[in-house]
Amino acid sequence: MVGEDEAAVWVALRAAPGIGDVIGRRLIAAFGSPAAALAADPAELERAQLSPTLPDALAQASRAAALVEVRRIAAAGARLLPCTDPEYPALLRHLPDAPLYLVARGDALADEPALAVVGARRATRYGRDVAARLAEDMAQAGITVVSGLARGIDGAAHAGALRGGGPTIAVLGSGIDVSYPVEHAELAERVAERGTLVSELEIGAPPLAEHFPRRNRIIAGMTHGTLVVEAAERSGALITARYALDHNREVFAVPGRIDSPLSVGANRLIQQGARLVTSLDDIVSEIAPALRQRARAVSSEEHSAADRATTAFGGTADEPLLPLLAAGPLGIDELIREAKLPAATVLARVLELELRGVLVQLPGKQFQIAAV
Image (cartoon, rainbow, N blue to C red; front, side, top):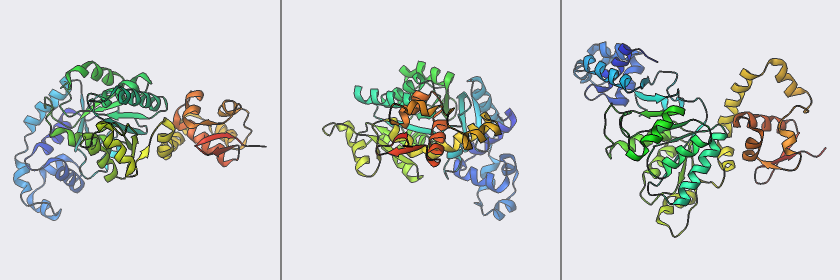
C-alpha cells in the first residue's frame, strides 16, 4: 500500500484539468511516476509527444487538495491502489481506459480467477435464485464473484458468493463511503469483511447515472468473463457484456422464459454466441486455463519436489479424485464439491490424469476412470 504523500501525488495527477485516466496513464508510461509527470517541463512533454497544453493543466494540480482526499479515503477505512500496485487487478491494468487508481476497502484483492455476475435490478425470484446458486458454486470452486452491489441479480450474486465461503468484489458506482442502494448497506459491510469494495470515484461521490457505465467497464475488465442472468433489451448488464467482448473476455448467459421481457437480453446474447449456462460446469470449462495456471502456482507452494515427482511418475493410490470416480463418471463441478479442494487444484489433477491415461473425458464434460 502506498504512503500518504505518494497517494496524494496520484490523486493530484488524475484531478488535474483535462488529465483523467487515459492521459494520466500515458504520462506514467512516459515519465515512470506521477511525481515525475507533474514535474515534467514543456520540452520533456513535447519529446514524449504529449499535448502542448499539458503544462498548464499539470501546473493546476493541487497536492494540498489531493492530500485532503487521501486522508478522507483513510478515514473511510479504505486505501488507494495505483495502477502500478501489485494488488491492482492484473486483467484490468492492461485496458487502455483502466482507472489510474482504485479505492478499495476490505481484504486485498484476491489473486484468483474471477467472473462477473450481472443482470436485472428488477429480477424475478427465479433470476435471483439462479444467480445466488451459481455464485455460491463459483465461490466454492475458488472463483471470485465480481458484481456491482445493485438491487436484483447483483445483490443475489454477492450473497450467494458469501454463502459459498469465497471472496466477492463489489464495484461501486459511488464513492467508497456511500452505500447505494441503501437497503444493501449491510450487504456492503459483509462484502468488506470477507471480500472487497472497490470504486474509482472520489469520497462522497453520489450514485449518478453517468457513473454506472464506467463502473461496468471495471467489472468486465477485471474478470475473465461476464455471466448475464436476466436482462431486458436495454440493460446495463448488456453494457458490461459488450465491454467483456471488446476486451476478448468470455460472455455467458442463463436462458430465460421466451415470454419474459427480462429474458430478452440474455436470450439474445445466447443467439449471438454467448455460452449458455445451466451449471458451474459450463463456466469452469471455459475459464479452465486460468484455473489451471493458478493451480500450478498453488501446487508449487504446497508440495515438495518429492511430492510432485510422486504425483507425476508414481502410482495413483494417493490420488484423492479416483475414489470419487469409482462409482461412475462425474462432472468437474461435482468433483470440485466432492473433493473439497480448490477448483484450480482439481482441474490441474484432472488434466494430469487425462494426460497419463488414467482418466478419460466423456460427452457432456464428464470424467471417468479409464478402462484397464
